[in-house]
Image (tube, rainbow, N blue to C red):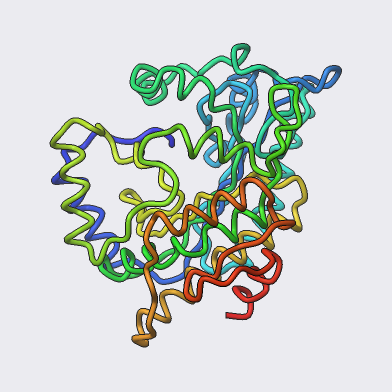
Length: 334
């Protein structure tokens, strides 16, 4: 989500296409969302504004942003020229955020949901962007006390970026299963491996697995339709689990739960980055990429939500079922 300029849609789309056409391949940026916790109770603590004030004048200031609720903080690596650079920055940003949290007297949590803190006790941060989303979504946004990891990968060329995003839809279930870190929510064991996905992806509009788009023209036509009909007022209201970003020349992968362990966070981001790069190579070389229908991918998304790595997934090319771990291994090998 985040703040953005309210440019007319024609300017937003023209700017997005221009940036993509002149963009650089395989730059990378990673965004991680963390819970702010009371050190005595470990419950969510609405203190983001205080944390932000502490960051003033420090290196981390421009990389620290609010994300919906005042008990949440997001840190961003910023654009990196290589994955190695981004991985190093992930560690640095965590260190910088931890130092701020120590000064403020709060702890940090990193899982897809908080195990028990009620959504009714969380305060939405007071910014124009989040006030608009509050008015638009009401209960849907109030309930969304979730934490994730997003990976931006630079892709040059508007048509190419759209094709890469369409191909990446197929691999969202494996990425979700690998990242699932949110079985506990609202004081119960949900029985799910990713309660975050069920709360966020299944309730927000224009969320989860998007349709496949053949090229920029088709993608732009749909974006114009959404703006023209008043369905959206800003492009950040496209909450798909993979999207061509309209402010940065990137394909953004948004399916993953937040990761407690830095090493696992880096590995997960590396896989998302590698898959985007692999899809771009396939597009360039004319390799056949099947864009499976939304309804079929969703069958595997549910399996990832419910059973994580311990379940099974459908091979959508053959219809055969195999273990999710085997599916992930096949994907890594590819």
